[in-house]
Length: 353
Ligand SMILES: NC(=O)c1ccc[n+]([C@@H]2O[C@H](COP(=O)([O-])OP(=O)(O)OC[C@H]3O[C@@H](n4cnc5c(N)ncnc54)[C@H](O)[C@@H]3O)[C@@H](O)[C@H]2O)c1
Image (cartoon, rainbow, N blue to C red; front, side, top):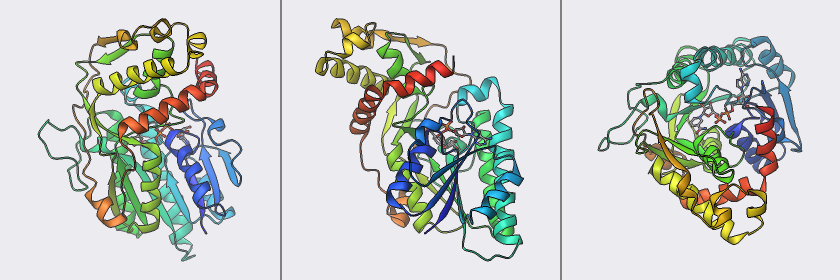
């Protein structure tokens, strides 16, 4: 049995992790520490038994210390972050504050509770990071491994790199039992509609333009969020303190292909379910046309990384990790979820306008 703090557990991946952990470890105590920024949504974890939501900022070290002591926390799974690259280009300050200072605040509180007071209890600090810390790959370059040198290119990835280094330092200097996972692009239920897949899906349903950066040939490795959550759980159960594990989906695709899949998926969904044409009257598929007509090319994002790819050999061989679905299957499930849960994202869009 474990007592967990899940930071950022009301966000996209954190909430999926809370659902996953609740199901696989029904007796564990889960405290979600989340500031409920624009990306956080208490509805994501509503109704889950034994999950306590504490609305608070990870930068408040005293709050974190109080939670660790009062709930006898032995595990921190750290998702809380500013996570959107576009926002980091227009407003980097929040990224440094939450991602760097906030991670350090958690590490300080964990060290104080688990090492300095001499409680000697077994503990684990798991840090969730990104493949973006490794920079950008050329078409023929080998995929990122855990030993690829860091070369972050955006304020987002630089702030995540800073947090990774702090986690590493707290293990090497103080002996804090840490693990870190660097993962690729996630998709799936509960993703805030500013990221490519939910944004384009919703734009398509409303018949709005699908603005593609540059030539659309930027390549990402797509990871279904449930596979990612299984990977993190494996890091917690089998990962060795001080180690880093890359977690990917094994699905390298150019953005253009992802967008074509989205459009095809929407067309098929309308063909299967004629009621959608009444609910989403502006979607081209409501009028028998192909959704791909909404595609448009816009000026590239500043400093846009060309390709990310993950070599997950270490996670496969040392943790027994394996992604369970390809992009086509994972996307079909995701599309069905967004169509069945339109109220979830419509509420979010209303709240953020
Ligand atoms: N989404 C991806 O594809 C992806 C890929 C690689 C790595 N990651 C990493 O995974 C983690 C989770 O990403 P996500 O997509 O779920 O992000 P998200 O933006 O959906 O959620 C972030 C959550 O953190 C909370 N939060 C933000 N600042 C906080 C603070 N100061 N104190 C407490 N809570 C705070 C927000 O309210 C929100 O609930 C992040 O660390 C991100 O860097 C994400």
